[in-house]
Length: 489
Image (cartoon, rainbow, N blue to C red; front, side):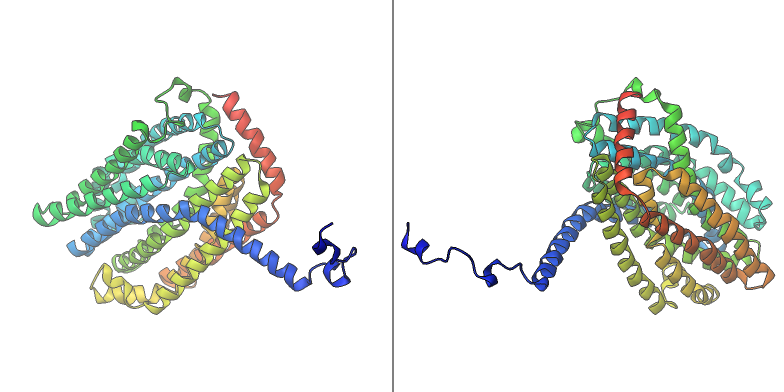
């Protein structure tokens, strides 16, 4: 026996054998938690970072167009805002929501390592969204009489109708760009979406300047620029996919895409209804504003606020997509606890960002509208609405993340009913009462819709998420992946 061994006692002292003090255990747990948060945050931001960039750049195309339109004149700004935010926005919301079914299907399939199904799912989504785009065409063709029927001024409705006809190519680009984006995002190939979005933005700004200021085509030039830039996104993403970027998930076009379309349509429809009920909510706000006294000033002021809100909304929408992917991947892999932890990290991070922008809007309440206009009437009206914009931004930092959890978990049908009740049974009537009955104007309409719709919906989704049995959801996801990859492949 070694002399060193002989010097050691056969039985350890009480100090050596006693468990570590509670402070040390708490410190170890804190380190473990901090490490888990760091690892999950890296996974989350791997998706969120490029998604924020790509969404902000694509949305900035609309902001650039609206800024150009605002400098053409007040009527042009109102007409382009109605066409882009109401008619195009109505269809955008439905198609975007329908494409979000891929976040459930592709994310869970990727987590379960069923890579061959991702390309099939995307092709099914192309078919469903393209057919839906055809069915939605009358909204563009008959935009002028529809807007007049809804109470818009003739000058605005007529010019908006012309813009809508020019934007039909943009409408069809959604049917292909949205599924491509989610197909790549579910495989964590987010860098390419950022690069392609940057290219599209450069195309848009260049064409907008040339066609508006050099060729002097006005709103027609802006419409052509939007069409070209969005189709450049489609071609860029498809080029990456088809030319070797996704060898495991894209093997070319397949007739399998035409099988199982009915089940795919049902999930896509519930996803579309879930998201578009919320998206349409703010379009209805703009339409309701158009029926008020001094509608042109009210629409212009509200469109500025909605543009800023939509611009910032790209951040929580990136969290919406990233959370859906993270939750779907964890559930597809059978890891319910991982899905729960991903949800907690995403909600906390997005809320902190929302608080920052809430404070920023309150500080710059009388200045941010200068991006779009120098009209003193519009600037004053926007200043009065700034606090509502700040509250909307704060609520929207939480709600989309919870909706992303729903998408990743496949709860679209349930959330669609929640959105319908919150927004249209509670929020919309409350907004009408505050706006018209109590004569609070556009601020009353908007405030009622926020408190009655967005706030209530956020609370209900939070309760559902907190009470969720994540292990049971993981088992459901595993069964779902097996069913879709065997019965319908």
